[in-house]
Length: 119
Image (cartoon, helix red, strand yellow):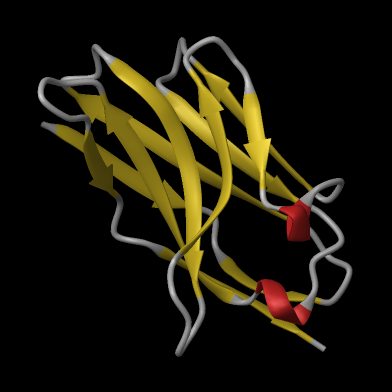
């Protein structure tokens, strides 16, 4: 099992910044990717950014150039730095961990943290 604990959400004005943190604990071996997803009301959950075990990153087009995902392996923590926030970034943000396994990998999720961007 993997436990994920998010923090750092809140209310911010358009153009502001927030940093989300996700502390990972439990059976963290064989984790292949960590990521941040978000879900706005009435919409499907979508990938925001992910980072592989080797450090490769992937971003949604809508956040490229504004958001940065990073990880601190010494603290077992993943971060999402969000700059130039827009009202359309308003959503519940979820930390995700994908763990390698046979026959398939397993996804673990945090409880979510609300990000609200006011116009």
